[in-house]
Amino acid sequence: MMDAHTPARPTPESAGSGAITDVDVLVIGAGISGLSAAWHLQQRLPHKRFLVLEREASYGGTWLTHKFPGIRSDSDLYTFGFGFKPWVGPPIATAAEIQAYLGEMIEENDLDRHIHYNHSIETADWDSRAARWTVTAAMADGTHRAFRAPFLWMAQGYYRHHQGYWPEYPGMADFKGLILHTEEWDEATDYSGKRVVLIGSGATAATVVPAMAAKAEHITMIQRSPTYFMPGQNVNETAEMLRPLGLDLAVVHDVVRRKILFDQDQIVRQCREAPEAVTAELLAGVQALLPEGFDMKHFTPSYRPWRQRLAFVPDGDLFAGVRAGMADVVTGTIARFIPDGVEMQDGTTVSADMIVLATGFNLCVFGDIAFSIDGKPLDMGDTVTWRGMMFTGVPNLVWVLGYFRASWTLRSDMISEFTCRLLQHMDEKGVDRVEVVLPPDLVGSPRGLWVDPEDFNPGYLARGQHLLPKTAPGPEWRHTQDYWREKDEIPRVDLDGPAFRYARTRLPMTT
Image 1 (cartoon, helix red, strand yellow):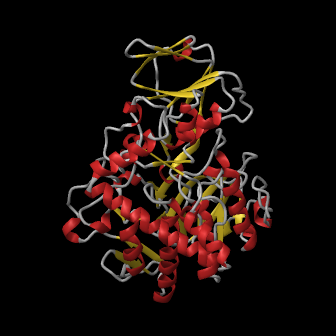
Image 2 (cartoon, helix red, strand yellow):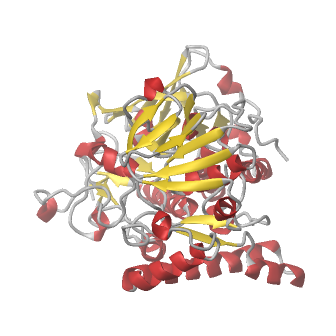
């Protein structure tokens, strides 16, 4: 097994030279989406030359860069893991377990020869005459390398991995202790015996609070508003029942995966059709794990369930810390930081030696890469999306943005299958260019936001919607969180339909 923190071996090209490297497909990012792309390219289109360019020193994306205490998945690994590689561990896994799983996949499929690490992509320019992208990457030693490919596969994620969102609170400079963000966590940080305030809620807080409570003198989670939590045992009963029967691991994985997706579909339906009943059930599950008489206002959100992601709490460890008196929750608005803690708007104070910000991400649209078309800067906010993966006016490019309500990887694998089918279709047609085009009746139609805030409204999206591509009327021209619809629709997309326009280099566009 590859060590989870050791970069795969370098290839001859990664040593660097002044030459431009030409391949058929460039994949940006070696996280779970980029690795899915690489596996599918190798399996479905073995004749294609491809490279995966990764900014970090190793694979894994989130699971490499996140270092905060207790880092673990908030999706089950039967659906967050790949459909083609069985998961055999607990449903909710640590970052180290996920990295080991990804390392096994790379080694088993000899993918490391395709991956170049320490390549930070700065620019990407489409040349219409040559029908290819030229990408420049900055190296760790300050030099640059250039790569060319007809097709660009963006799998770099959606947030800045080393820069969290820092709200501005009055008096931050007055606080005598350490202030740090979960996105920028230093693993050498010692919080043993300290009074810790964590600002934020949701999946990150649910992970950090119980982990820090084990060492800190006390930890207080300060939240502006509560999050829905779903406690449960970190075990899958279906998997535990099937494994002793001697079934092939792939069969067990497939059955468990299908069962989880069926159950998730039922939850989504219930959230939409009977939100009051779902809310009551979720709150009852939390209340059962809290001390008698605990004020449930701290765990009673004001929004409908599923407008933001439900945060799963394995074995109820967040609530165990509250029950044991090692952690507590304060709900309200922060007025200011004071030298020895935080003062709330109501005048109460919370003492702290250390303040941890779990206040979310900064959106990173298309890797913060400077895109251009024939030398003209491209603003992705001016484009319209086709199904959240292709964009008007942007040829030969797909972007992987996974699901937030279901497991991210479900969509990255789906997009991988679609993109390989599209590339094969282009070869069969003898074309070297594809882009999506709005039908004439939608050219002047109103443009909508990437995600409807009434449907899904995490802070990082609210802050960055203006940077994202727009939507147009109709299900094709928007990004959806509906896996259960897309799993049937995307495999059946007509690649010769009116949304697609193909061309041969230097020849008129043809449909």
